[in-house]
Image (tube, rainbow, N blue to C red):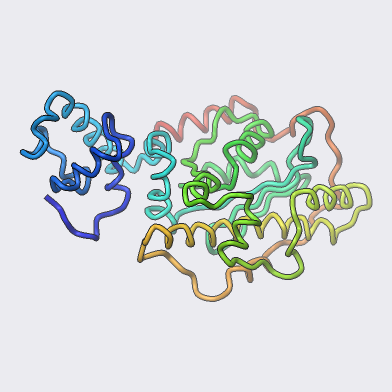
Length: 307
C-alpha cells in the first residue's frame, strides 16, 4: 500500500464514497489506505468488520479509477464533495480557462450578456455583443476545464439562456464554493483583499454595478472608453480568478502550483479595440446566434460521445 506524499490529491478524495465519513476516513488512513489504488476487493485486516459494506467502497474506487483513466472530469465535478473540488484545480490548473461575463443589468430576467472574457493563463479571449459574441459557443466547445466565481448561479445560466444551450458541455468548478470551504466569503473583491491580490489602479474599486453603468454609457452615448473599461473590468475578474485559485492551492499545501513569471495583469493590454460603433439594445429576447438550437444540441451530444 502507498505512503508517498507524491500521490495526486485527487486520488486521495474519499469523502464522496458511500458509507465514508470523517471517522471512517481516518480509520482507512490508519489502515494504510492513502488513495483509490490501495482499495482491494476485500478490506484490509484492521477493517474486517467493514465487510458488509466494503463492496460499495470497492465499487466506488473502481468507478473513480476508471473515470480518472478516461479523463472524465465531469464524473468528478458531479460526484466530489464541494470541500474536495480544489483537487480538480490542482490536477488541471494549466488547462483551466477562467470565465466571467457582464450583462446589461443585474436584476431583470430580460437583461442580456454584453461581454464574455475567457483567460487561459496566457491569453485573453474577449467576446463582445454586436462584435463577436456569437462566436463564444464554438469557443466553449474547445475548452477542457472552466472555472468561474458564482458561475453556477449567475454566469453559466445566463450563457445557457443567451445561446440556447441545453447544458454547459465542459467540466466546471465554481471558485465561490472552494473559497467558502476555506472560510473565504463576501464576494470576489473582498476575497482579493484577504488574499492580498491587488488590481491595477485604473480599475480598482470597479464593481458589477459600475459595469452596468459603463454598458449604458457605451450604448447610449457611444462612449468607446466606457466599452474598453467594461471589457477590461471583465478581463480583470478572470485574471483574479487565476490568482485566487493559486492561493487556494497554497492553502491546501500544494507545492507544485503553476506560477507564470511576471505580472499577470499585463495581459490586460491584449484587449482589442471596438469593432463596431455601439451595442444595439435588445429587449425581451435572447440573442440570435448563427447556429440554431439543433446545431447546439448536436455539438453538445457529439462532444459527450467523444468523452
